[in-house]
Image (tube, rainbow, N blue to C red; front, side):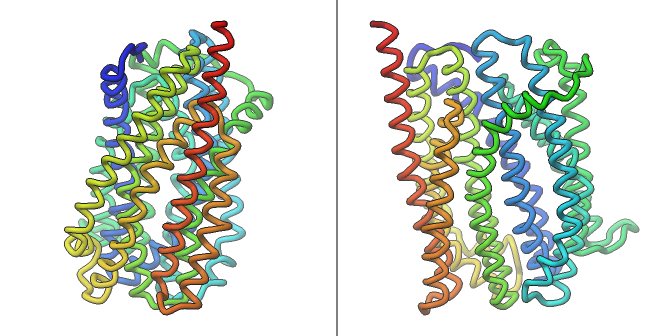
Amino acid sequence: MNQTYNKKQKINQLLVILIPVLVTQLGMFSMNFFDTTMSGHYSPEALAGVAIGSSLWIPVFTGLSGILLAITPIVAQLVGGKKDHEVAYNVIQGSYLALIMAIIVMIVGAFSLNPILKGMNLEREVYETAHDYLVALSFGMIPLFVYNVLRSFIDALGKTRVTMLITLLTLPINISFNYVLIYGKFGFPELGGVGAGYASAITYWLVTIISIFIIMKQKPFSEFQVFNKLYGISLRKWKEILLIGVPIGLSIFFETSIFSAVTLLMSNFDTATIASHQAALNFASFLYMIPLSISMALTIVVGFEVGAKRYKDAKEYSWIGVAMGVTLAVLCGIVLYLYREPIAGIYTSDANVLKLTAHFLIYALFFQLSDAIAAPIQGALRGYKDVNATFILSLISYWVIGLPFGYYLANSTDLGAFGYWIGLIVGLAAGAIGLSSRLIYIQRKKYSVVKGNLG
């Protein structure tokens, strides 16, 4: 990355980093997207089973992998501050931590998965698909967690195009394995929705192996000599990573788990409602990759500028990112409203599920604007390493405001399942307002420091 001197240069540099991040996020999300859509065309039960399995897995993974995102602002600030010699040590310690986290998740899952699923009112086939899908996915957990550290390192250097190319290379592999394992093609067993879990696990291994090879062999990554030295475990460094990463992970967990909680609460509805809810939520999550990518790009550029003590530039980047997010959200909202029925048809050919999905998609429109504000601001705050307030705001917005309100509407009014979605919209809006206030406070505080130094 380079220092910028005007708004045009900042927009250009942000786009150079953002576009590959967006393509990468869409590619990574597409694995879950194709898991859902291809399972949905196998049977409604397969779609519902994968939906339940994903609802249990996604908040756990995103929350814990969010901890590992601490590597991005750490490396970005080290590079911005000309401390390149410290980068490799931080990346390796992050990789050790990722390995331990993955092992813990698998152990906990082995003891808790059956009790959780048995506590839900699921049809037998849906229960079996959800269970076996998660077991299959577990074979790829270790490489997936390690990859998050390696990707954070690559992206922190501003080389987001590299992770984009890795994702684009492996996505067709994931789709191919989905096809042969879900439907039983070319002599492979017909596994239904479970096959999607094995396909994703295989893909996670390939992504990680390719990333390691690139970091070892290609410049500028090879110049940091990440894998050239065997470092001992440093609990002190783990503590530093966790102090930054845990609030990030909790913030992401509170946000993603609210959607999963809604899906689990909706297990009392029929299979068609569960399937249509998950299909609409899956597409809304697909659109969320836009503000999420802006968020990740802002963490990189804001962290770089803060590391170089250019606080005014960091502030300008922050609000340019928010403006981008809102503009794109409006455009996506228009497309979503006009084409909601064809979009629903991507997920299912069942007439009842298709009709309900199109209805849920109308509510997804209102997710976009709040996400367009909240996600970029979260990314900017992470660039400042201001992470504690974010998870508190997420907890209050989603779990204290959004979920209770949605539960009330769903169970005490005629809105039924749609009441949960209204609750989610209210929670997201509350989060956007709180985060905006926090960013304004932080930037004023940082700017006053600069003025004091100049005086």
